[in-house]
Amino acid sequence: MSDRLPHEKGFHVSWDQMHRDSRALAWRLDGKGPGEGGAWKAIVAITRGGMAPAMIIARELDVRTVDTISVKSYDHQAQSSAAVLKSPDPDMMGDGTGILVIDDLVDSGKTLELVRSLYPNAHFATVYAKPKGEPMVDTFITGVSQDTWIFFPWDMALQYVEPFRGKD
Image 1 (cartoon, rainbow, N blue to C red):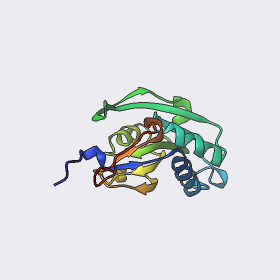
Image 2: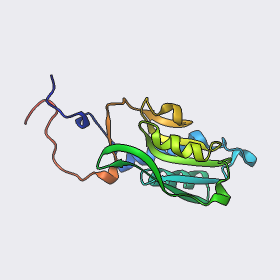
Image 3: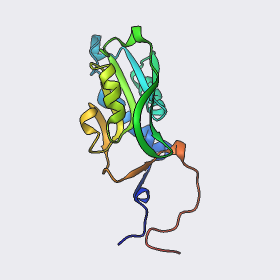
């Protein structure tokens, strides 16, 4: 039996890795939009985690219209019911046609389920996906197990960590 906490089964993502994975997501989405030449009308980042990958993807795909939807579904690292705190421009959004919605991770799928109910024709893309949330996302780059905690670079500080199997 392990004396590690569940969140210690961690997947640590550096800024470099986030950049590479977000660019890989952009490559996968390139030319897949419904506009002329497969262009996307706009990108909507789910705040806060979707902002970094959305910025990278917007640059790579040359999408100049970027907005945000603020959804709160975590409270002090515990999942709660999802609620929209701020919506994107309704005239731009319509039913979501031509809109690329970006988040860092789909976990349980509750956040994407809520946003998809508002914009059913949008394309939902995440950098990382857990099995419970995969049905809510159209495109993602890396799948991780449901019990893995992803440590994103904006949540991290550099410090010493003891070896997995004991002390030095």
